[in-house]
Amino acid sequence: MTASRMPAYDVAVVGGGPVGMWLAAELHRGGVRPVVLERRAARPPYSKALTIYPRTMEQFAMRGIIGRWLDEGTPVPSSHFALMKNRLDFSFLPTRYPYTLFLPQRRTEELLEEHLAELGVPYLRQHAVTGLRQDETGVDLEVDTPGGAVAIRAAYAVGCDGATSVVRAAAGIEFEGNPETWRTILGDVELADPPPTPAMTLNQPGGSLYVLAVGGALWRVAVVDHATLYDPADKPVTFEDLRASALRLAGTDFGMRETPDAWLSRVGNAARQAAGYRAGRVLLAGDAAHIHYPAGGQGLNLGLQDAGNLGWKLAAEIRGEAPDGLLDSYQAERYPVGLDVIDDALAQCALIANPSREGIALRDRFNEFLGSQPSLSRELAIRLSGVAIRYPADGPGGGQRAGHDDGGDAGLGGGSLAGQRVPDLDLDGAPADSIFGLLHPARFVLLNLRSAAAAPAGYAGRLDVVTAKLAADDPEWTGVRALLIRPDGYIAWATDTDDAPPLATWLGPALARRSPKASSSVRPARPGASVRPAPAGSLSSASPGREPQRSRRPR
Image 1 (cartoon, rainbow, N blue to C red):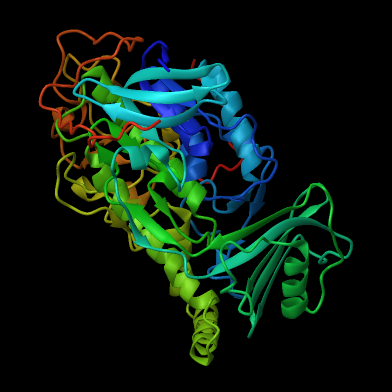
Image 2 (image 1 turned 60 degrees about the horizontal axis):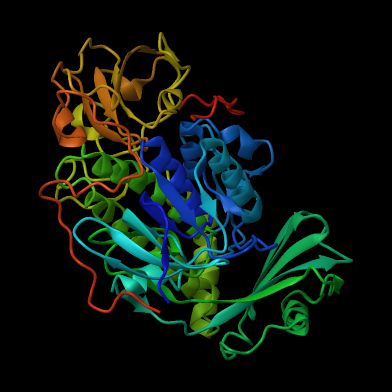
């Protein structure tokens, strides 16, 4: 059957979950034209993820929409590592959001879809991508729709379509790592006799259990039951399985009631990462790029931060304004972060799912260390929060490895700032009250604190130049005269002298005139861009307003 043809877009975002929607919003802010293709007819009624970490909240704050999450979410001042009894305190973190925010993923998806509608980004349900092929100038996607097969052509395609990504497979990208060897079960069920607190964790020699109120009459009951770890992967999960595990581990089933809205699932320990996050004009983000056991609830946050890193870079590439190596820096920056999170999840798995005598002893000893060694607790909290992520300081094409700060003072002056996240410092004399307010338009910001540097001509529309003072003295920022802030809130450059900022390194060459905004036409690749054709046979059958911030923590 000959497929009909739809209008072309700049980017086809495949997968309409939270990662795909946030990426589409960031692309729109970058001045290009995305479309979101979602295979499902409706959003699932359940929520896989429940936790939003501080760095993700900072992403929403940088776009002026954090109030929507703060109005509905519940701040939780601590988190856990491997379900240990001694929890991680987040209150010391240098952010306005020193806590985790409890909000079921379903509600986050609803808020993001409302945001896309405000921006005017098309979100097409029941559009299942079945294959793709790329060439030197774009990507052709085959899409099944209620009206039949259609073909969509875009300059780029991004797979945000989950662990079984059709996009990743069609682009010929390997999904490397470890297969599932054990699994646990969880369910959202009604409880007639729930715990006295909204959250409860139990650790026993036979495994672990946590119970958490998820809204309405439902409670999440998740068990790491050593007696059932090696049940067959294809064994259906039953209500009685969940009840039996709760009785074994807690001595009670909390009065579980099987109702029509109950949700049961089996979760495995597979740990995989895409061999590359880019193959020519096809890129990956979220679970399409990496999967791991959901220890600590890091997966949603990792994917949203992928999208925040990729969106402005891909938009610059499509506009023809990206410096050499900028789009490839997505892989260079995010792959190591994804690997760190996978290793972090594997470490937790080693603690929670080892039924041997040695495993139980290791777990008990590690829990003691968490309670007696504050530095260990702080280090784990910093890593989970996302605020310590640091990218290479030498710009696109540099050879340094992304990673985490160690949680100590970074020597905040001169070039030592480059690569780390910018804090939301309060400002005087600026068009916004704080640094994050300057980032609402998702452009680069040259912030002059003790300098009067001006941007050369040719960067209009890509760079905002702001002269301001810090509203409060901060010894960590003494001597910093100017800094260049990326659209995703990381510091590209900082100086304690009157050096000129490296604008060409980050924004490309100055233009004689502003490039036109993205249109529906597909642009040719930027001269010199690296484009690898897909493997043979890979084709198969307006800016939101500022919202109030709840906390005014000035760090």
